[in-house]
Amino acid sequence: MTQTENHIVIDARPATIYALAARTEQWPSILPHYRFVRVLKAQGNSRIVEMGAWRGRIPIRWIAEQKNDPERLHVAFRHIRGWTKGMEVEWLLEPCEGGTRVRIQHRLSFAFPVAQEWLGEHVVTRGFIRPVADKTLACMKRIAESRECTASA
Image (cartoon, rainbow, N blue to C red; front, side):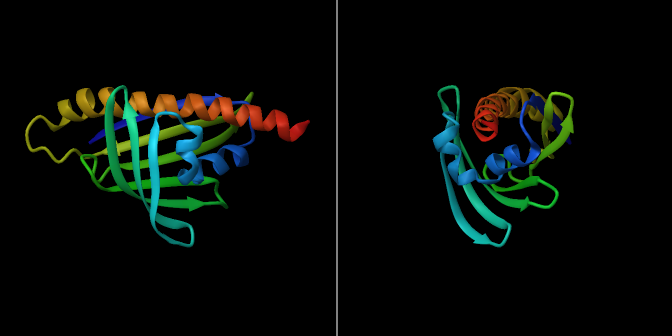
């Protein structure tokens, strides 16, 4: 299994960050590397979303089951279609000095029978997951911190 984590400290409340992370349908308007997010099915706090992003000039896309937990301020995804099928992703928000530590964890059991650890780490994780998640966190930081300034003014 390949596991990776991207993290950042954002000078904003966990609820502000959760609101941004949970509303994936708005990501293309706030995250420039996201091409589209389509909600295919929604029921309560669960939904199926089709997502597309850019990794540099390479378009990537996948379909995931998204579960939002507003009580715990937790967002989780399980990829159900695409080359990352089976990957589990969690947004973890923890209050800390300076705001909120935001961690995005990815866990993938790559389905290739040969060299799955190498492919999972060197191709999927280093080539796609980390760069896209780093951009996502950097944009979320900029947006959440500006919203916190606006909300507290």
